[in-house]
Length: 374
Image (cartoon, rainbow, N blue to C red; front, side):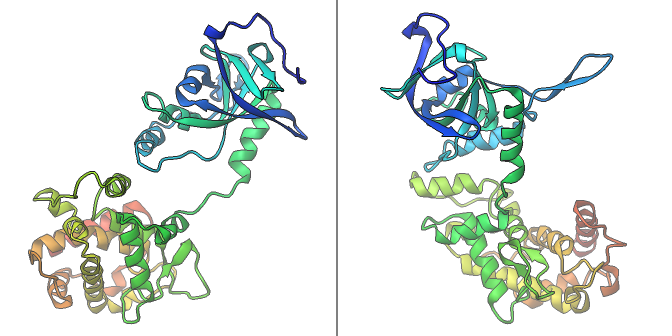
């Protein structure tokens, strides 16, 4: 029997979970890497959420953050997709009285019951797999008799030291996918408009979310893709999964849904070039209407930056529905007729008038929509 493992009672296979494991020796000590069924993992694990204890002198106990129901909902949806996977390990701590390792067979046996395995990292993935109902194996890293200090430091190291992948990079990687998806379509349009000379977005998009030495790169790739996605669907991951499974053909939308997701039907018909052309013409009209503001990248000028772009792209469905061109692509002149109804001047597009963030975006959207759609 290896260091740190004891058996407090006679094994009863009815109340045990057995799964293959390898022992690993590192400076922190010995731990075990294995594969367990998600249903078994859910049955034995619990999260020790950070909280206060006591009244006179508050004492903080626990190491985990609160469970995010939104994140859990996202994972529950994700695990139903055709290529769902959790390649990184869920980390657990188990008392030695509940575990025994057979070195010869490389099998770990642990007691089956609630509150056996404390979650150090991975509580959202475990919660997202709850009630999954189909085979889903999970790789786990298990520490035996790990003290609270080491538990806290492992959790802190995982969540502070690792560099989070930017959303722009994640979208950029859709370029390598063969499966058609809303994400790939929006990524391709963002790159096309950024690199095509004459485009209203030429040289303006921060590809991979990083700006070069060019001062005109003012909109991140993630911002562009996120906003454009909302004009196609509210469930891009589900649409991609449906296409990859080839379960059934995507269907056209009718009003009022089609009035909101104005690019969905073109996406279904694989007319991505038409989506790009509409974006091109629309923002060309913005440039014609407020050229000074659209081409001003100085601090405090907002039309060319995220606040202005977000408000304008949010306005686009209303403008398209107002023009009611059907299958025809509105020309720059068509958009310009409506934009000229707004009596805003170039000098009005400042951060003093429209605060950075969602509030400024909302104010600008409201002002433009009231004037243009009158």
